[in-house]
Each structure stands twice: as structure tokens, then as C-alpha cells.
Image 1 (cartoon, helix red, strand yellow):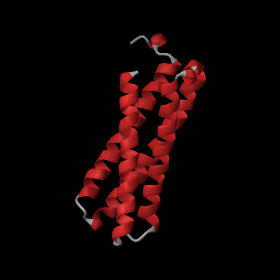
Image 2 (tube, rainbow, N blue to C red):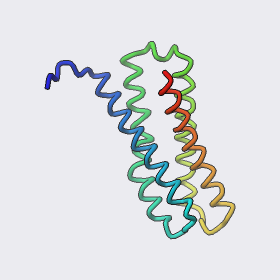
Image 3 (cartoon, rainbow, N blue to C red):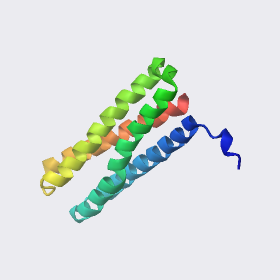
Length: 136
């Protein structure tokens, strides 16, 4: 394999896409597990969020910044600015849902609804980002 053709940008972009796949896959998996409405799955969900989703929600913006440094012209695109805003909101919803899971009593219906709302908004944000990137 000719490693001279692999650029820094392409490597970071590949890592960005791997992180996105991990984050989206985990978000979808957590939503499916949570839809079973079994409170005993709380530790499994917390493990998935902590070990995969949280690192990905840090790693993706980091690689995004590294790609932007390499190709600054992307910031002049309106779709990229929308993608960044939605991505940051998705990080917020992801962290809010984890905070609910750790610090709140999941036996309470209201708390479970708030957790579900945050999870669904995060999943919606990731889905919108995939659509934006897919069309550009």
C-alpha cells in the first residue's frame, strides 16, 4: 500500500467518520434498549453511554476542529455552520441524558420522560447531521 497518498486531512476525516458511526450506533442502541422500558437496563445503558458515546462526543468535535484547521474554507459554507450548531446541541442533549441517568431516580415517570426526550433530541440531531453531510 502506498502510504504517501494518505493525507493528514483524509486520516482525520476517517477518524471523524469512525467516531460518528460509533456515536450514532450507540445512540440508536441505547434508544432501542430504553424502549423496552426495563429500568434494570440502566447499568447497561450507562456503560454504553460512558464507554462509547461520551468519548465519541468529545472525539468528533476535536477531529472536526483539526479538519477545519486544515481546510478553513469549509467554515464559509452555510451548511457547515448549521452542522456545527446542530452537533454542539447534540452534545448537550447527550450529556444531559447521561446526567439524568446518573443523578436522578429513574423510577419517576417525569424523569424517564425527560431522559427519553434528551435521548430522542440527540438522535434527531445526529440524524440531521447525517442528512446534511449526505447531501453535501
